[in-house]
Length: 346
Ligand SMILES: NC(=O)C1=CN([C@@H]2O[C@H](COP(=O)(O)OP(=O)(O)OC[C@H]3O[C@@H](n4cnc5c(N)ncnc54)[C@H](O)[C@@H]3O)[C@@H](O)[C@H]2O)C=CC1
Ligand SMILES: NCC(=O)COP(=O)(O)O
Image (cartoon, rainbow, N blue to C red):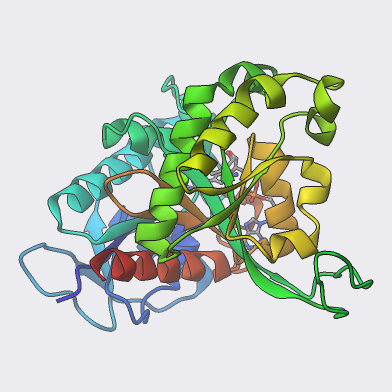
């Protein structure tokens, strides 16, 4: 029997509950972790007729119903209106999913978006799922990677040394991993140390192999500084920190590039010939990916003992309860989690 994937409904005032309601007839076995009355209330607001089934690990899932593992809210919710007293509920849904994944009850977890600000307003330091899940699974280092299809992007039209065909369009999977996650920009340069870079690349390589079936991943590494430091004239991190690590890993058989200028690294002719890009920080890599595939991208946490994927967007409070939330990224996140489970079993 296929173990279900756990779906956490995220911030209750956001679009997470709306997205979960659209999963009733999904082909993959799913268990939504959320407050039951919140889902019923949002269904009424959206005019969706829905059957909820109370999930029990001991009983089969009920097809045609939304299987719900009930976690109670602290306060009733108004769509679009944040309330810090419900932040412990949000975190409890995540804890329950992680417990189930670690115990083998769930094959993985897929998260709807949380609102990082309101959790902090509730007095709970929180930077993101990524760091929170690392803590819950006692994983010393995890790697954030977002993936999405690049479609119909302009391609360099002149055949060159890269051998690029004279084609006007391209379609390929872009994977962008990050060396640092939710870190203020001011702190990024100090955080890029040789041990960190080496550990991140080892996690990236290992998970691309075991969870994506890529035998020898080709990884392009972005420099930290403009023009990858311009031979030391625009910063020294590439020469002092990055190049020695990359040389060492290459000698071990890794297919990693030298630090590349991030502005040209993201040109289509380069991206389509690699399996993943390692960007040094959140806003170096993710804007490119979201520009290409927002709404159907997937966020993945690598390096953990469990499988976790997520949507590529946030809580979109203004759309909650409106019927305008696009479920595309959630569907992709479920698909990718299911594929990762398959790869791991293979
Ligand atoms: N995985 C997670 O839990 C994530 C959580 N967030 C959190 O979400 C909150 C809001 O972040 P923003 O930067 O405003 O990003 P956002 O993704 O919520 O909104 C950006 C724009 O995209 C639109 N949008 C987002 N999701 C959509 C969907 N499914 N269908 C149609 N339109 C959609 C919104 O209406 C808005 O115009 C923040 O607290 C942030 O921390 C942001 C990204 C990921
Ligand atoms: N921009 C992606 C993002 O911030 C996702 O954060 P997380 O909550 O998945 O850690």
